[in-house]
Image (cartoon, rainbow, N blue to C red; front, side, top):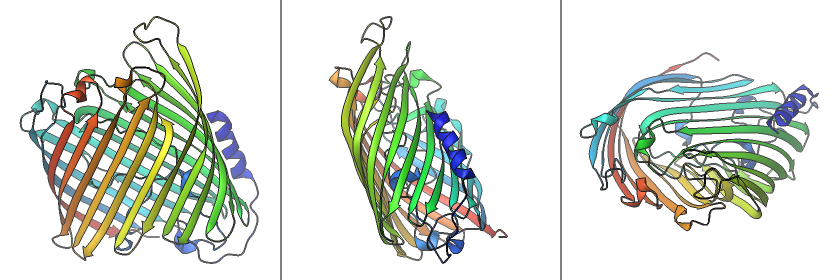
Length: 449
């Protein structure tokens, strides 16, 4: 299936493009040079997370670098691994470097932030962290756009982030499920996306793409009850612009979801057909909806008998979702809800996932900004009759940022995490509270166009 999709993408890229009249437009890759007749890629099929940045924070053609220091108090750093909650204070140092460059055809955005984390009491978890991300949009021709992105992280804690109050919000059904959280454990995560769109007439566009994600716990003794997981997905879509503000379309998606509990592999494959609708009331505001049937086929061993032949569990179920994105001068917000079959986030097998997430950013004054991010996830494991494997996660982070000068920013925040899963790591200590503080010193330099 992925080979078919990528072959189709190559064929699309080689097709001739219809000439059209050009005016000003609104594509994120190069707004200043876009044409008014160029269609946007609706969020349900774009494969991208919503940006949650204020107008004043959007900058391009810049080299940025700096140093960040953060410290936090966590009342549950080890989960139930020791039989009771363990609190600790950690310190992290983050050198950062990156650039954002836009030309008439290409937009590059790259950030690299190695980190060094230290713990007062659980010093065995001290670690050198790695965070890197790269994204690119390339206009192969006036109406063919290629997009790609990749994100990699190596960390001893899911809370070790440069900005914990900036969780990603997606507009479609694809994307990794990371809702089951090991508070403090060595983890390697990698996810990526590649896609292409072709506007072959004034109001019609086709496209396709592929995504992947991997989550690996190098030390399984730190995460009893959880396992590694991975996913691969491919999609193809058609969309029609009914008017300047209204888009309708259909998409086909294929996913392969894997989990690797000790001794066997658990695999689920899904096929989905969704209809979607997106409306753009303004250039910076969009609302999207998608719905359709989803077929899943899970290959699972019999519970308690790993040597038995795998059992195939097949089912049809409705799936769908909705999302909203607003990018304003003083307020920016992204919200979404989805009901789909997804990876199990470390649980045994795929799950039927109900997920809601939100990210909001508000600027009170030129020097004071507040951020709120949170999500709710309900995971119901497919196939197994052991209901105790099911559970849900609630998480929320609030933060205040204060600019102390042209280059120095201070941030103060609080995170609350609650999980209900009957697995060894979480059952005895389901709640985590963390207060954190950070100082970031950064510089920017313009890049030539």
